[in-house]
Image 1 (cartoon, rainbow, N blue to C red):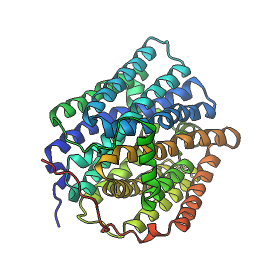
Image 2: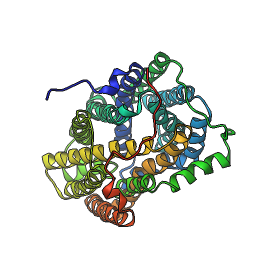
Image 3: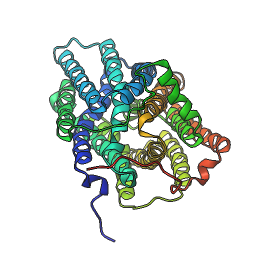
Image 4: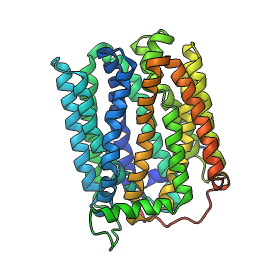
Length: 415
């Protein structure tokens, strides 16, 4: 059976958004890994790296629910125009401060927090927009390709990070990221107007509208359990923040090799996503999802134990592949089981779990590493991921029996 063009990419409006995100994500991922390296150069204490997680998660916790209500009561495409423009200007500011030698660790924390506010509004609108660009039958493939774009950008970006820093300087990474946001803005322009459903009960941004979104999630055990599992897994197995310390202190490599290690997870994730994009129907999705999370934890433990660059790279690539499988499945479950008029609010709650897990995990990892060392923090995090997954399976056993052919809500028609 030969390769075929993924069906979601045959819908031109989704293709424009997909291509724009691919370019933009490369810049964003370059900046994220460059920030870890930058902070480690400014302050060698592991807790300083944990601070970036705090700067990224607090705005998400505070503003995500509002962002979800905005996505359900305002034009999602217009919201993205604003958020993408703001993010570009902030990246430009980061580059200018770095180039002229005015940057401090507190500038990095502050700009990161402001970018996180933009993400809190952008995420619900962007994810809720996708089901309006493709029909329901192509939605799993659309999320597979979206994840592929994210991870492909995560391969290209980090792989270039070390080289760009070494030959063009730290500020060049931030300038590239600022420029990359233009790709999404152009894609949004080309997409044109995207009709969406706004409930008659949606009276705007209010406490009641936010409460409605939370109550919906609490009434859907499959959606709630996937969100909790997402949080637990990423909280305990967040080794990314400590990668500069592992690279220099354990593996004894430089910035270029650090860039290759930074891209390893994305390489594995892209491979997994491309395989899934060729599968027309995924079955036994619950078992596949849970197995992937456990493999994620095991690979994290191996990464924390090894002193070999090759084994470390392979372990990180395995975590990326496992995360790719689980991300595609859980996103498909949530979007198909959520009506359009409430997708933004559902996504905003999920964003708190999705962003909160790794960001709070960065704080946890940095704190543990400060007292017990980076390898210990990574190993215990992987073990915590496995234990947490088993506890959630025990609480919500229906996850194991989810097949993927359960009744689905109809999606919007695509052009």
